[in-house]
Length: 261
Image (cartoon, rainbow, N blue to C red):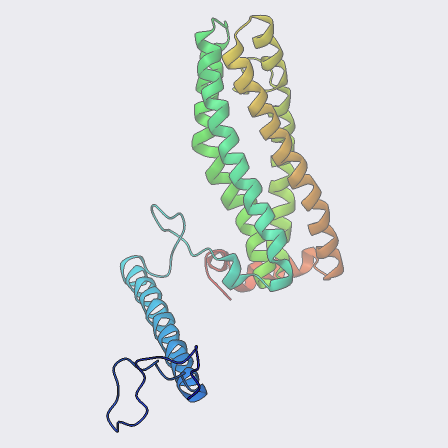
């Protein structure tokens, strides 16, 4: 009688009952397919549950604040580049929004630098600090409302009025950026001149912060100037004109500034 070395010695060869020592039968292809289908269903259920939670969270937010979602800590307006800006223009508006955030961060650094300029004994430190506080209160609000929001609305609605608002007020902002880069003492800017004086006085903290502020002013100013040219080219190619802007203002009024469509 031949003996197979790979054969299970406990396997049953004659009993009709299942032998608990038998090797488990190989899972059939149908069983594997069924398991894969069940796993796919489970993943879909989890995805649906996640989406339902997101929709419920959005619904709760809308009930609490309306559709407004910006600024996050106190929603006053609705702001969503993904939802409101045409796909081809989203990268440009995203970059401009990021440059606006750089502006806000630079204003904060500038304020801290002016504090250290005052502490370093600068005779103009008090005026610098007072002006820098005024900048951080007013510049973020006015820049957002006067040139960022208009170009956001311009690309969303393709109306001439918003482009002209952007060109005028963003032009003033570019001049303001140059003014802040220079950093004349007593103007509230920890720009280039203030930074050089800080190094000369060996006030290294104020000088280092002034360096960061100067880089920030330069970065956002050059970046906005670069996109200013692109937006001008788009505005020209789209056929916007001052006559159209006047007509839009007479037709829609100021209310259209805060509304969609």
